[in-house]
Image (cartoon, rainbow, N blue to C red; front, side, top):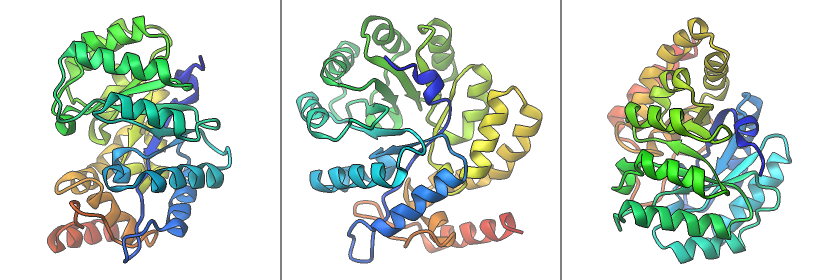
Amino acid sequence: MKNLQTILRGTGVAIITPFTAQKAVDYPALERVINHIINGGAEYIVTLGTTGETPTLSKNEKLEIVHFTLEKVNNRVPVVVGIGGNNTQSVIDDLQSYPLTQVTAVLSAAPYYNKPSQQGIYEHYKAIASASTKPVILYNVPGRTGRNIASTTTLRLAHEVPNIAGIKEASGDFQQCMDILRDRPTDFLVVSGDDAISLPLIALGMEGVISVAANAFPKEFSTMVRFCLNGNFKEAKPIHYQLLQAFDYMFVENNPAGVKAFLHHLTLIQNYTRLPVVPVSAELEQKIKNWLHQFQQ
């Protein structure tokens, strides 16, 4: 198995899906965002993450987006594909039909709504890992899925299932994160799934972050992460605090509506989402415009 700790060390970007006014996928805008992220120095791209509004994309759109992303990235950085869901067999079917030859790994969010037991979560991921031709990265985001992947379950999967190669941890639970970092296999990737606490989590031993904010600020965010990974927190902290208010604005109403507003005012995309997600309120959008004006001074 590839050692993802080396390949995916640093900043990954959970890339948004831009839409036109007619709510079709805006491929020219997607290409602009891809180039913005790579030129900004981010280490890799995650396509079809939940930040990409995947619940509202059709199967054909998802396949087209993966093909398009791989073509436009053109091996400049690694690409991870999000393939998850609450129907285990459906996830396995997707793993067998998606174009994964050029993909580095699969990121799979924990089953949502079903609220399976920890044993159910274990069996879900074991089945997915067995069916996947690529290493599988767990994605723990209980605020969205309704069920936490306990550290004991993560560690059991890490030690017992060879194709489980890492975790994106977005529980916000520092004790849980430390338990995983202390007891993980030596080659098991652990990255933050929360922009605002990535600095302290890297200080505890994580290899980086899969970021939403780096869609908009890849240069600043990935520079901060590299400083952290090199133990240079004196240089990292000013960037962290410079971006902290932006993190707040991105998530206060909805993700990805928040980051899409930033990208719109950076002239990279049109500000459209698909229902049930709606663009940010006029009040929040004004705050974002004001913040960007100060940021760009």
